[in-house]
Length: 266
Image (cartoon, rainbow, N blue to C red; front, side, top):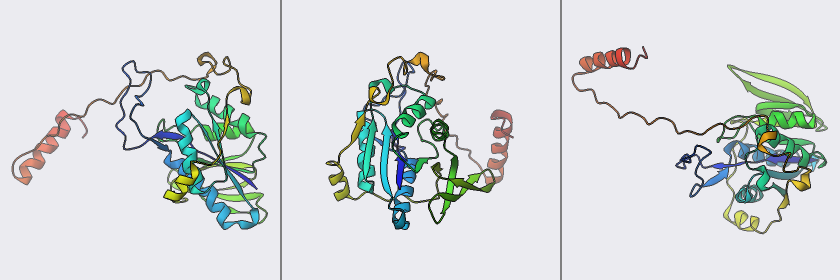
């Protein structure tokens, strides 16, 4: 059984993000990039499937689309325990929208013989959650999002999937091949060991550019995108905090007055 786990490199959630002066993106110099936390769940879900279902004889491949620096995401996946890694890397991929990302991924995946794909529910950079469903559509596969639990069929040809919806949980029956987008709560990602990280530096990475996947510069031009990023802008600065002096009753009365008359929140 062949399993694919998709992983994206994103800025560390603790990084100090600054917007470029022209509003075209963020300043990446000096910013630490890591594997998207939800993609860590996807890799972990694949690894736990293999560990718990030895009869399936699962072979796990990690794949990422991104610049040369994104290779570190695959090194991390190797250190976690995947068997193979594929890096879709080309300057032409810079700036493509989510639908085109899905099309490029589908081109790399379609002849790979995969039975199951795990993705993260969304990435913490743009926070859109569009690539998983779009990729499933490009492949013609069923997709289940916000997955929090899976029970596999005896023959590994089907699964009963639990997914989180607003205020409830939904149970879905799905036939494989399928794409599952993993939500927080299904698995807890393991920490790669230091020896594993050292060994991962020597593991092979199968790199594919746009031409190898059948895409030309015209196919990936800005004009060919269905959507485009208009402008990045930082959030407005927070106003300074205010201290309210006085006895508790007086302070509470003053706070209510501020919230009602000045902040207009009550």
